[in-house]
Amino acid sequence: MVNFVLVAGARLGAWAWDDVVPHLRVAGHGVHPLTLSGLADKRGVPAGQATHVQDIVAEVERQGLRDVVLVGHSYSGIPVGQAAERIGDRLARVVFVDASVPTDGASFVSAWPDGGAAVVASIAENGGFWPPAPAAHFDGEGLTDEQIARLVRGSTPHPGATLTEPAVLAGPLRDLPATFVLCVMPGTEPDDAEPDGDVAELLNSDCWSLVTMDTGHWPMFSQPRELARVLLDAAVEEEFPARRCAGPDLTPAAGVTARAARQPSP
Image (tube, rainbow, N blue to C red):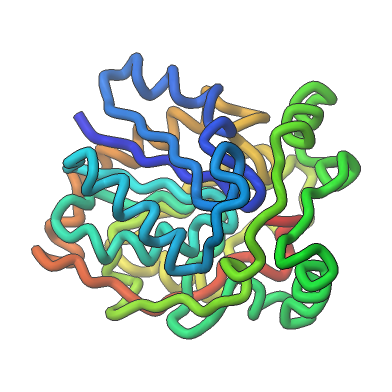
């Protein structure tokens, strides 16, 4: 048995995993979907980048979890990647679901083509929060109208500081036992159907593996059963290579922001 800690991307909360959770639980695992500070049912709580990292670490410690598979979708790959090195030998694996991966000293938006200028401006115009995306934002992502409506209805403004403050890491990210899930819609141009250069380099590590899903950026909505299967497979991959990749202290570190230039949104 493992314990999945599930963290959805920007503007979303624990509710985003509702269609995935039953498939993991019926397989006999512990499942802990987590809402980060300032979002969903925790809306209005002040939060910075370090707050979101601590949210994840505190969930693991509060519940005394071991054999933990941390799962970060989109933006949440940034705090999940940092939290992984802070939970020590409790960690089994990290799964980045079409996610950004932290770089020491860099923010979520810093690798965007405009350096995050548009997001920073939007945050300033909206009282320190990044506003929810309109329904049109989710077009072409393999979602039904009902699924898009759920996303729009459930999204809340995202605390802006978490997107603009830098990540803090300590050791080589390539030593983190990790699975990168690349979501690619059928018919995507070949250049967009492969991991970006820095992620491809990380995938050369024995500790990293790649899984591709034929869907858009929100697989927990578009393909929840298939995503659950990916997570279950990742959980048992090589019988927890965390012991082999990072040693007892599990101190991974600086990496890259994955696919930031072409992700439709976090």
